[in-house]
Length: 110
Length: 113
Image (cartoon, rainbow over all chains, first blue to last red):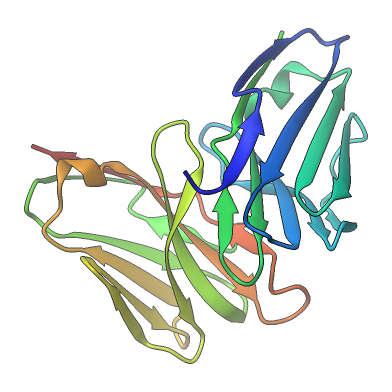
C-alpha cells in the first residue's frame, strides 16, 4: 500500500449520471494530482493541486470538476460523461519530486 | 508528441536474464523517474535520477541518464517472474512546476519462468 486510497475501485455509469471519485492520502503530502490512463496511451495529467489550490488544469472538459477541500482529500466530480471517458483514473500525491499513486478507479461509461 | 518515449514497447525475457528499457525525451529536465505498474493498478516509484547525475543504482535496478542525448535507460538484472509489469519513465521539467511529471507510453515487460 502506498498510503493513497481511492474509492470506488470500479464504477459503471450512464452518460446522464453524476458521480464522484474520491482520493485520500495519509502521507502528509501537500500536492495532489488526477491522471487519466486510457488503453495504449500515456498517462494524461488532468489536474494538480498544491496546498489546496488548483495550479494546473490541462484543458480538461468541464464535465470533469475537481475539488480539494483539504490537503488530504481530492475529489473528481463527473457529470454527463461520454463513452470515450472510460479509463483508469489515478490519483497521486507528493511532497517533493516523487509521486505516490493510489490503485485507481476503473470507470466505464455506457 | 510525448515528452517520454519508451523503447521497446514490449519485451519478453526468461527469468534470470537482464532487461533493458530505454526512454527518450525532448525538453530540458530537472529529473527523470522510472515507475512500475502492475496490470490495472497504480504506479509505484522505482528510482529518480537528477539532471546532474549520470548513473544510479537501487538493488537490482540500474538507471543511466545522458542529457546530451536526452535519453535514459533502466536495467533490471537477474529478472524474476514478479518483475512482469509495465515500466514508465517520467520527466520533470526544469522550468515551470517541477512537480508536474510527463509520462511516456511505457514498456510492457514479461518475464517467463
